Length: 560
Image (tube, rainbow, N blue to C red; front, side, top):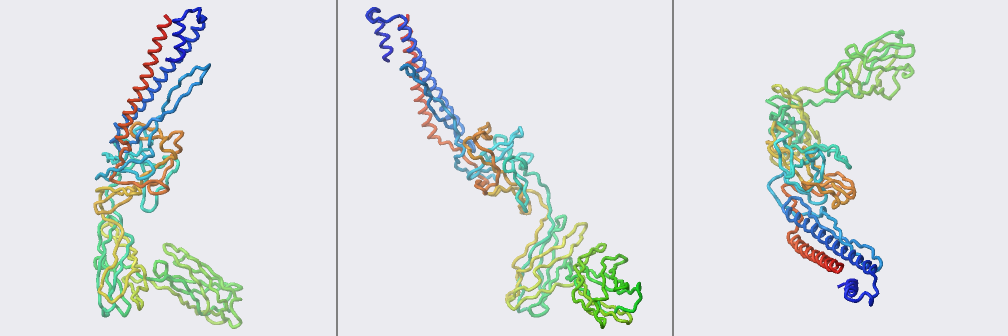
């Protein structure tokens, strides 16, 4: 019994005169006792309430012990101290704060579904709710829907970025802009025409001249149809072979050619010609497509030299000027530097850069006689490619070959560029050491795969994997301070820090596990222990309240 109550009891049994307590003193003391008992009862209620909160989190944790990606809740206690006045102690209480172990990773359970996903490390999947709002989650039990999207058990849709095989998608680091729903049914039949490849072979060094061997590659036309190309190797001399590429028995090789790069004018310009006199020289050059193009040069006498006009089919495509001072006293052209004519487009064809020389030109009083030495090798249809090897059997030239495009039943088999730099000529049998052509036949989607970097591949019936999406991974500075939302998802709070976007496996983000689910991080044994503790503590606090109530009843009876 408290000292104050003892005083009250003594006052009740002693005579009023002997203790000399006034009715006012008794009322004052009784008031202090009442306040103290009320505080005791309130403290007991506070303790019961706190333990009830703890028991609630235990119940929630146990209920979600099998919930994928669930993060356990716990109650943290802190004391509430009231100031002491006039020697009377005012009992405070306890307050609770619920925290979530969001940053604590659970164990993994492995499944047979490639769309069951988990993150091994930091980060969250980004999902979209029915209200169009984005949330974060570790619950990766995604299931394909009839519209092709992926939803988890709570109905949230997985989000990501559209992806190509040539570049990573651009992300908005501090926001959800650019995200789109992952859709596995967004692709239909597809066909990719062939454009490039490689073909490396070993040609037998001991083969006799005239020896021939054929191998084949399948390429795909613009409609996805497979087309067979035959590669025919024929030995023509030591360390020298010819290669022909045929489709349906016809060569499709792009003929080798060299465009014109040098024109050297020779002959004589009659220095006695009157001003305005003209003379024309007719020539031809090889354009950048290997086609021979006729052109003419019109020489016109001026007072101090000659104007030159280069003409093709009535179109002047270049001009030049030769000054009389460029000839010596004997009439010989003395300027060794060429006139550089940059590439010029003439109608549908183009020239390369041409160096114009006049090293064999004279200007004397004699009749005109104009000639030209012009380099360049035109393309010749059906010409074969010559392969040359060094003494060690390594290919010297060329390192790649090209074929011409072919139109077949309305489809186009594109010209192919094949790397043959790994070909050899060694004392061994003919063998293909590498053969590959890009493109694919028409095929439809039969499945999908997701790798550890979060790239979603669509799998086609021909076995090809085509990247279509990359999963968005988000993180915050303080994951445990995120706001939990119904459905096992989280939203940003004032104390969690801003959401930062990234990719799996980079910049500290965890890797994606396909065919796995993150288990709840709830420990049943730990929760059952906490349940017993909460029950005992609740009972103890209820006893405090009960005792305070009984003492209050005693005090009330004393007042009667």
